[in-house]
Image (cartoon, rainbow, N blue to C red; front, side, top):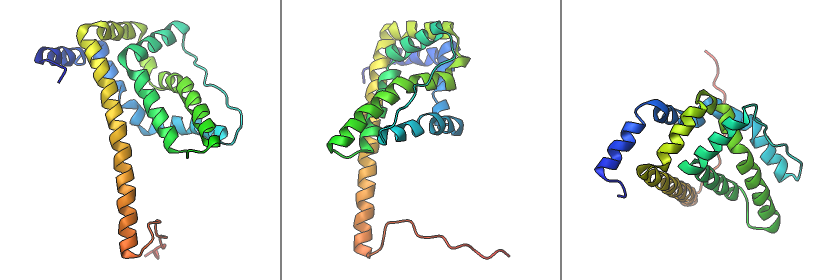
Length: 197
């Protein structure tokens, strides 16, 4: 509702070509199998180390400092960084209970992921964007319509996280209720191997 018809035309025009189009194409990279493999290889093992009280190492970038700086500015002004942090906090807190040890784990795991997720994203996908592309994106997000879009991005992510958590909890509850009524287990049944023809 915060967008006028003219705002929508400007947003659509920006994301239809140049740096805007490239940025939009990048938004699907982190859902890909390759991206998930990178996360599993570089991030998840360290989150497990944190849970076991072991030391972790930060991910280092091989990209130039000037490039890293432009990526960070883009992340901050576009709402990308805030959205990532929100998802990280939600995911980590869902994997822990409320006792003291888990609160320490949540704090440590959140800090680790916050410090390293941006670097990993930059390494995994954004090198195909130039510093000039980032500069164009930053300038767009400094415009009146860009500022509106940044606020909307953060709100959409926040609501999406709340919805997905709520939906997952409702599904879990309905599964348990059904299992109790049917007097069956909700654990996955063992799959019997079929005889080969």
